[in-house]
Amino acid sequence: MSGYRAALDAFLAAPVSVSWRDLSIFTDGTVARACAAVDAERAAGHVVAPAPERFLSALALTPLDQVRVVILGQDPYPTPGHANGLAFSYVGPPPLPRSLVNIYKERAEDLGLAAPSGGDLSNWAKQGVLLLNTALTVREGATQAGSHLKLGWRAVTDAILAAVSQRQQHVVFMLWGLPAQAKRALIDESRHLVIASAHPSPLSARRGFFGSKPFSQANDWLKAKGEAPVAW
Image 1 (cartoon, rainbow, N blue to C red):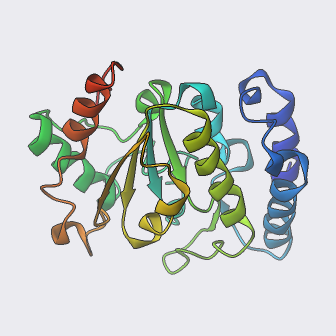
Image 2 (tube, rainbow, N blue to C red; image 1 turned 90 degrees about the vertical axis):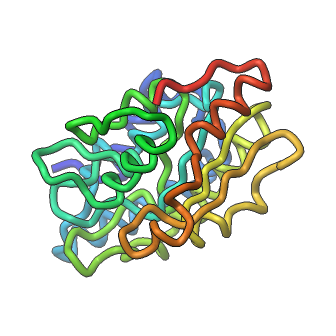
Image 3 (cartoon, rainbow, N blue to C red; image 1 turned 90 degrees about the horizontal axis):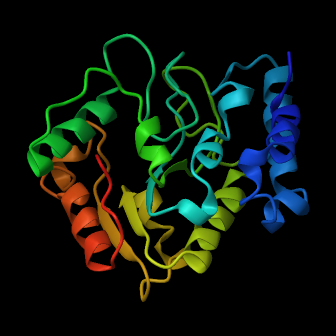
């Protein structure tokens, strides 16, 4: 069974990584050290999500030079079978994760679109929506949310956000919840739009996520900058 370090090497050798691989975190060992820490977790008997071949899916599906929107989550779903490497995305049988249900509720209220039956958000990713978590892995289990936040992923995702801010011209950053909003200093707000609100979790969605209209805000701003809107 291949591990996360091996999956990193495969990603860097593949064409999908071409826009990301020159970031210093990939050349100076920062990502490799985080992957080694995750492999040590698995060697100690912990089940980790998402699977190694999926943990870099956000970067693989959304090249750096095509990023138009960033949606920042905290860490992957810890529920077994839920995480697939894209923040908030879910591929599997019902029921959908509750945060995603709330995202769909706000999307319906904001844009008048019926909720999809499935939770796969890869279509967003392919349109330039970087679905990034602040930690790229997590231990599976009901009480394990946040379990890998201190394994070195902070430096990785901070560098990714900073690179998007520095290299792209007009990007919408959706910062949902206080951990995501703590990254705001990495964003050049003279060029980019920040939409900050409560997290879509059932614990906080009614404290400012519902009614925030992030999808229409993003599209209105993109169109004003001469960019194509996202088909949410």
